[in-house]
Figure 1 (cartoon, rainbow, N blue to C red):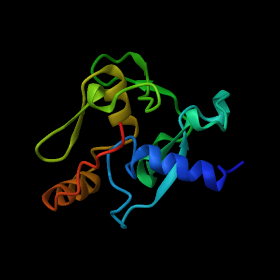
Figure 2 (tube, helix red, strand yellow):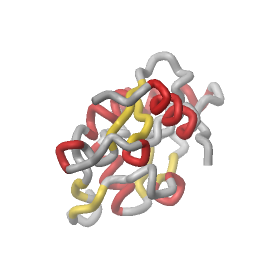
Figure 3 (cartoon, helix red, strand yellow):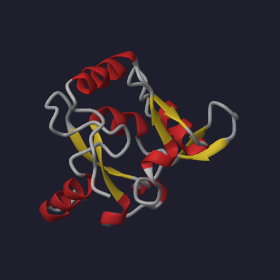
Figure 4 (cartoon, rainbow, N blue to C red):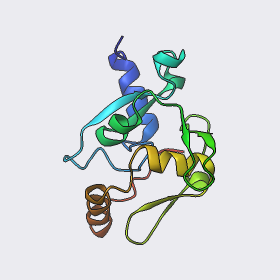
Length: 140
């Protein structure tokens, strides 16, 4: 079941037009944005707004139904970042070259699983940063 029009508006407004994973802006027309189930239906997630977030297509595609992954630093399982329950700045750092670093197991597992540092994605963020369009500033 797809989110209703009012639910989609709520999610876009709550996210401030930002991908809630990599902080790209919906205003950058080169990226398609989608509604992501934070906890997928496969893992008993629901259709409530509390389980939905705004995601750029690459983040959503790489995340798929996953809710956990291996932290590449510790080789231990970790939950992925949950934008409804966690603060982005506590889990991620934007490097000068626009690559992203995870500060926590959740952040590292998310950066790795969502392939946030693929060369083309970093180059796109870097270009957006030079134009003053990255990182997108979401609503608190």
